Structure formats: structure tokens, C-alpha cells
Length: 259
Image (cartoon, rainbow, N blue to C red):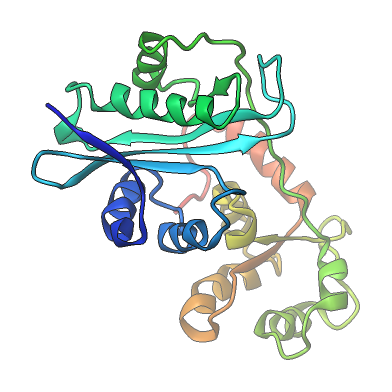
């Protein structure tokens, strides 16, 4: 299939956004595209779009300029492929390669001596496509992250007094005692939406120790979004969590409360 490759213009925003949403469902593509067109063309990278014979936007490549160190590079700055996508119905027709070639031409004309890219370590289709276009793999890495949680006392020092969560905590624990009644351990707070952590094990701690005032978090979580329009929060004891994890690992019959 013959495709036409051209720089993106403001009139292309909706078609470009539709493809971007398929590649990055969680991205705020409308805002990011608007920011792209608002930037000085001399300072930004380049976005190229592919159009099929019916003038339908069927692919795109987004390039930036990275001035910090880029894996495997020997020069700086380096042109960088931030996004490369072809609509599934238009794949295996040479459009992806045409986009990448056009991006390389832009980078050379702009004076860059190297172009780099990346993909997820398990995205074999992308790895194969890069190699087929002459890109050499230079490095693999595994990335880690850990949420930094506040203790409940630390959180309440700066939380608004009118916060429903603050009010609920004071009703159960009082205005000063924010420790686990079973272990005396300072309670930590998990902001479910803010940290994006998996709290399934914490929920099980709450449900398996209903005599423990931790159950305040259990009831509040389900009310927060609908009634108070704020992040869901849950106080919990790290010792309770550790004990539950150990019990869960030893529980071969599945008898612990998990519903």
C-alpha cells in the first residue's frame, strides 16, 4: 500500500488522537497534542503522520530530542522515537518502515548523527520490527518502584480538618492515638488511588481482624468516591500485614477470610 507521510498539522489532531489512544490508552492525548502545536517548532521534536490512499490517517511516529545520555549512544543530543504506531488494519504493508525512514530523514536533516528508540522487554513484535529496520539492541533493564507511605500521624498533621477521612479516624482512634491496638505499631496510610498499590492483602487484614478498629478503612473506602469525591484512604498496621502474609502463605486450605 502506498502511504503519504507528512508532518502533523492542527487539522490532523482528531485523527492523530484516535491512533494515540490505541497506543497509550491512559495518556491525555488531546492535551499533549495541543501542547505540541503550541510549542516553538524549533524547540520541539517532530510528529509525522501516514495517510492511506483515501486520506485516512493510519499511522504516526513521534520524535523528540534527548539531550541527556541515551543508552548505546556516542553523540549528544540524539533523536529519539517516542512513539511509533500503525493501525492494525494497515500493518504489514510497509507503512511502519516508511514512517521510521521519514523520521530518520528528519533527524539527519536536523543535524543529529544518531537516532534511538525503546520498547517493552516483552514486546517481541516491536523488537522484531526495529531489528528489521536496522536498529541494534544495546541494553535491557528492569525498572522498580516502591510507594513511600506516610504514617497516619504524619498524614493528619497536614490533612484538612474538614476531610471526612480525618473525622472518621478521630471517631475511632481519638485525636492523638494512631497506633494499632493489637501491636502498638504506628498505623500507616495507603492512598489507594495515589499510590496505585495492590491492597488486596490489606483488605484481607481488615476483614480477618474485625475486632481491630482497622475496619474503619473498610467502610470508608466504599463511601469515599460516591459521597465525598476524594481519594480512597485506608489506615493499616504493617505488623498486621506481615502476620497476614505469613498466615496466607501457610494457609493451604484457603480457610482465611478473603471475601
